[in-house]
Image (cartoon, rainbow, N blue to C red):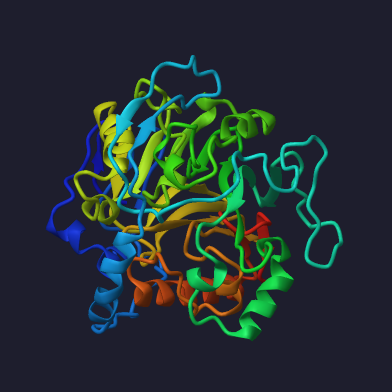
Amino acid sequence: MGRTYDGGAEPAAGAGAAAGGERAAARGERAVTGGEAAGGAGEPTGDVTRGAGDPRAGAAAAGEWGRRRMLRGMGAVAAGAVAASATGAPAAAAPRSRRVPAGGPAAGSAADGPAASEPGWSRADASGAAPAWPEVAGVAVCRAGRFEVVALLDAHGTFPLSRTDAFPGASAGAWADSRRVDPRAFGPGDAWELDFRCFAVRRPGGRVVLVDSGVGPAGSPAASWAPVPGLLPGRLAAAGIAPGDVDAVVLSHLHEDHYGWSVTPDGRPAFPRARYVVQAAELAALDPGDAAVRYAVDPLRAAGRLHVVDGGTRLAGGRGGAVTLVPTPGHTPGHQSVIVDGGRRQIVIAGDVLVHAVQLADPAVRYFFEEDPGLARRTRHRLLERARERGAVLATAHLNRPFVPLG
């Protein structure tokens, strides 16, 4: 399948990685097995952005870029207790974030909203009927062949921007359709209510791939805008998943609400046996002072746990299915999604390819904080098109329901 590099070694993210985007997406598949990562060319994964190039996209987005940067979080944040058993050690000052919106969800904790932490609690779908995959005490499960995908509700809150400001140009019809898919997203007035969710892919034998690590504790970089502290450690325990069961943590991208529980208060990997998998294009796009660098990237690199990939990568597989990374750039330059293919059923863990059901109703709808709106739109169209062709189940980070069937 290609050349293999040591578990502690990190390939350089050079000029090729900086190009990112569609070029990285067109790379061949590489395998990552056990505690190691592998690089080199292999069979193409059929990436979701190939052939979608638009030379006008960069220029069209340039004017919006400065405005989006100005709205990103500006307050200094602290690196605080990460594990559920944190001892309350003093938090160290963290660099300001340049990649999140100013302000934040109004909720004070992850348990705010519809009693998400109560035992026996489960949501109803848009029709009021019991959902196909009920979410009980913040945990829901969907199976795909040999794989079990566990949705883990880390937090819930109200977004700082109104939904019409966050999704400019969405039509009345798209809003109506999205309300039928995710009615809980519609708060009072023009408010956008959203979940913050991670996913665990449990394989035969009990080993786990964790997709994203949530908003983190009260002192995490997300504290300036997201509803911290999150509840991920307790959700994992409720699902029967110990930190040592996790052998890979896929970071879909390096926005604060997706890496918050990656490290412990003293900077050690919170999942000590796991490799943390990130796209080279995502690292190359980070400013040196970005909160992600100090809080997560540098500690994980120092521990030999940071595994950089460039393009489509198989995480696990064999007879009966596979778990595969696919580049899905646009929201950020190195955004990636996870495809869990169990044969008869495929589950697409989309990350932030879409963040509201209005983008499911109309994939052309732009999210205000997409770094390359044109590329994000093309990526979203292609990912949803292929998922619908397979009759896949969409696993979403920010919709108020963990799984949405597309068949």
